[in-house]
Length: 156
Image 1 (cartoon, rainbow, N blue to C red):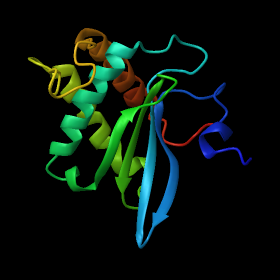
Image 2: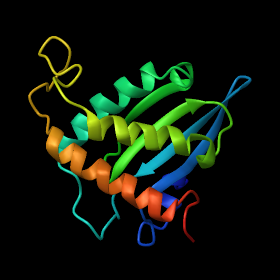
Image 3: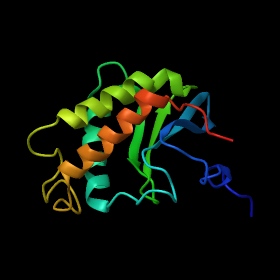
């Protein structure tokens, strides 16, 4: 069986960043999958499910309401390894194209106050497992890393 693209990235050298994970053609459309890598795989502890779940709820809400990008967002959600999230968008895009969007996403989550969108039993299958404080901690750390290093291409 062929090894999928994400398993071909050297996770020992991977650092927080905004990376193009893959591009797929669907009819005449190109879909770009971004790897929003928030922690260093195999070097830092993974994020717990509660904070990843909160990042998913807040991130999806922000992205699907963004005045410019909302119609291009297909999916935002956590990686199984809990070291980041995937963002799938319409268009043949590069990391640089969405850098400001990702920074705005981070700022939205850091500044968020109130009830987490969708965190109610009729709206979510695991609505009680949320951790806003830890979600803010990880997203602040991620934003600071992006500001400092602006990693936009997978390391060799």
